[in-house]
Length: 113
Image (cartoon, rainbow, N blue to C red; front, side, top):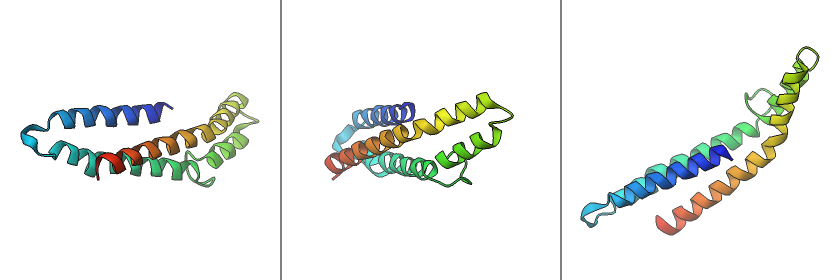
């Protein structure tokens, strides 16, 4: 939720500034948002989703968190519980990222065409 909010907020704030800076009737500010900011944000979302869905050898993935929790459960039970909680929160993160990607694609379709 935090990542999505920051990404969307930064994109919207940046686009507002870029659009307001559109002096002389040229769409230069809009071009920056459409050609640089939105594609970078979409790439970052795809990178995060790929990492989350990765295998046990992909640091930060759900499988990696579960495997690490299993490894430390006997020596550090509190850390194992924390890792389990983070792994349990991943489906909500995936949903947030997919929603944000959809919203960005809508903006891209409507405002950048």
